[in-house]
Image (cartoon, rainbow, N blue to C red; front, side, top):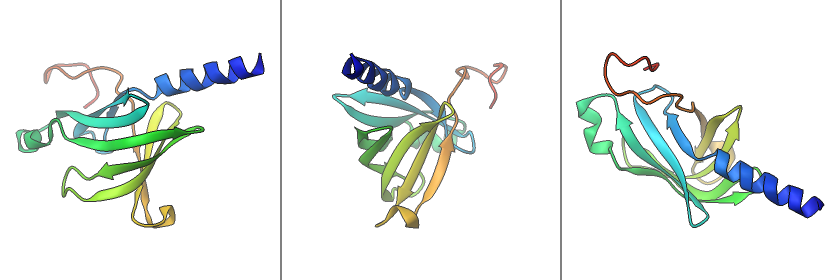
Length: 128
């Protein structure tokens, strides 16, 4: 019975991480999905035409679940294309993403807020 409860909790947690998230300065949205057990994140919305070339970029790649975190993947900067090792986890419904070179202590963490609604126009009630 205990194993069933733990398995259901793990499945629920895995599904909870999927969704759309704002980058820290609310200029991009990243859609996070599970595909064959791997977590990926792709830019699906940008605020300005100058960022249009970033649409479709996969910036979170190949993260595998390890307890309450996702590890072993890479984080790609949409601005300069640099690739970092990374760890991803949920905290209060938001996606926490730590990118680093070498050891995690030499990295930085960003909070990506979960998107509550989708901006469709300038008149949208969504917080931009």
